[in-house]
Length: 481
Image 1 (cartoon, rainbow, N blue to C red):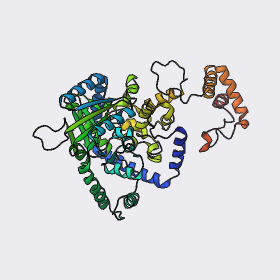
Image 2: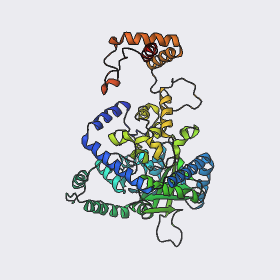
Image 3: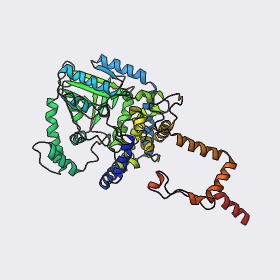
Image 4: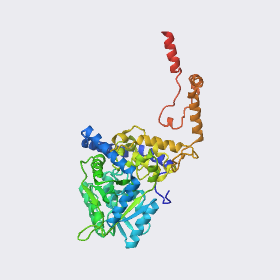
C-alpha cells in the first residue's frame, strides 16, 4: 500500500458523514433532483430495450476480452507507444505515480501544470503532491475547477460539482476570482471561469490528462469530453502527461467504438459526447500543434489484487460512466462526499477496498441496500451486488484464515462475538430439537426482549417474538378442522 496519505474518511468518520448528510435537507433535495434528471436522460437514450441490452452485451464482451488478455495487451500497448515516440512509465503506488510526474516536471523546469479531467490523478492526489513541491497544478474541467477553488473533492466521477447550487458557485467565484462580480447567471459564470482558464492554457508548461480507453493495437489514447478543455490540455503545452489505470486498455479501435457509444449515453444521457480526442504520439514533423514531448503513466494501485481474483476481476470492467451512482438510492441520499473516497457510490464501494485496503474501507461495502439497480444499468454488466457481498465476507473473514487469494485488510471487521453469535444461530437451526426449544422459549420469555437492539432500534421499533409461533398457530388450525 502507498505511504502517501490519501484523504479518505475513516470508518468512524464515514458513519458521522452519513448521519450529517441525512440531516441536510438541502443536500438531499439537490441530489434527489439531480439523480432523477440524469436517470431520465439516460432512459431517453435507450428507447429500444433490445438494442440497449445488445449493446451492453457487446460492451461486457469487450471489457472481458481485454481483461482476459490484460498482460499481453499492456505489453503491446507499451511497444506501440514507444514506437511512436511516447515515454512509458509504470507506477505501482500513488507515491510512484506522483514522483514520476514530478520528475518529468523537474527535468523540464516546469512550474505550471494544467490538468484535464482525470480520476487517476484524483486517486493519487497529484494536485496536492505537486503544490507541496512548489508546482502549480490547475484543473481545467469546469466542475473540477469549481471544487478545486472550494478546496473539496469531487462528489461525482462525471459531474464533480453536482452538489453545488448556482448560488454556491456565484459566491465562490466572487470570493476566489479577482475582479469578478457576484452573479447567478450561468452563462456569465461559465465565461468567468473560461477567461481564467484560457490564460492558464497558454502559460502552462505541462498538460496532464486522463485516458478513457487506450488501444493496444495502435498505441492510441482515446479521451472523451464535453468542454474542449481536454483538447487544449493535450495540445497547447509542450509536454503532455497522460495518466491511466492499467485496466483501461482495449485490444483494437473497433473494440473501443461500442464503449464510446455506451459511455456518454450512460453517463450524461447524451447520444454522443461533444469531443472524441484520439491521440497517437507527440507532434510530428510538419504538424503545427500538439505536444513536443509525451508521457504515459500506467498505474496499478491495487488493481492487480482485483485482477488476480476471478470474481473480483469484474471490478476492472468499469468505464467510469457513473450510471451506478445515478441510480443508487444510497448515493442519492448521502452524496459523494459522505464516502470520502475518490470513487463514491457503488463503483467506489467495490473499487476502494483494492485501492485503500479493507481496513480503511471496511464500511463501504455495507453501505448498500443490495437492491441491484446498479447492476441493472451498468453498461458493461458488472455484478456489483455480488461483489459487495464478497467484500463483506472478506472483511468479516478471520484474519489468519488461509484464503487462497488474500485481500489487503482481510478480516478488518472480524468480531469474535459476532462469530460466536452466528455459530450459536447455525447450531440452533441445524437441529430440529434445538430449534423447537428456542421457539418455545422465545414465545414464553418475550417479555425479557431488550428494548435497545444495537443499530436496529436507532430507526426502528424493537424486534419481539410473537405470543405464539407460526407452528403453534398452524397446529391449532389443523386441530380445529
